[in-house]
Amino acid sequence: MARVFLTVLLASRGAIVFVWHVPVPGVGLVPVWVASAFLGALLGAALALLSLVGWRSVERAIREEGTGERVVNAMIVGFAGAAAGGVLYVSLGAIFGPSTGSHVAQGLCLGGSVLLGARVGYALTSPIFASLVREERTARGRPRPEGAPKVLDISAIIDGRIGELVRTGFIDGEVVVPEFVLSQLQGIAGSSSSGAK
Image (cartoon, rainbow, N blue to C red; front, side, top):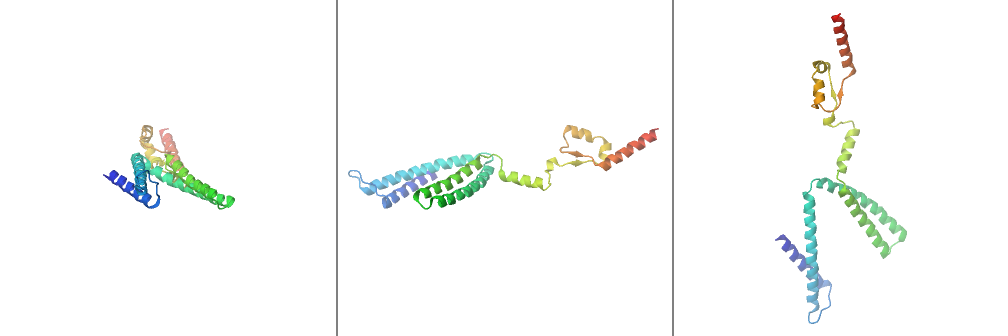
């Protein structure tokens, strides 16, 4: 129903615009306003068809996994492309001066750089912003929880089960034994060996 409504809306809008602003020469007994209305309606219906096809491809892309990250990437890289296009826009205007050709070239540079940046950003599979946040957290010295180092005290080492837990992979990340714990272990080992004599 919405497709039919959009098609009728754009076709009628096209017919009105062509009758009002773009007179098409009549053919034989067909008056000018009828030819204009027919051509405008035809172009409006074509525009509705293109819009519907584009919307279907957008819906398909939204349903894919990771689309949100890719859209954010497209916006970030597209903004960078817009900045680069703005520099080219100003440069071309300064070099060639105001003319029709330079205005066309400026528009193509600006629009093309935005579209190219957005397309490159959308093609990136890993999120740019998340990697920036992860790098910032790592630089601040906040390790990720799953790889946090495990510091052992003397009771955990004497218990003896810690080695088996590490071997089975139940404990992940780096296992750290502080120097004072090693000194205590050496003291315990020395006292037990002297007591055994």
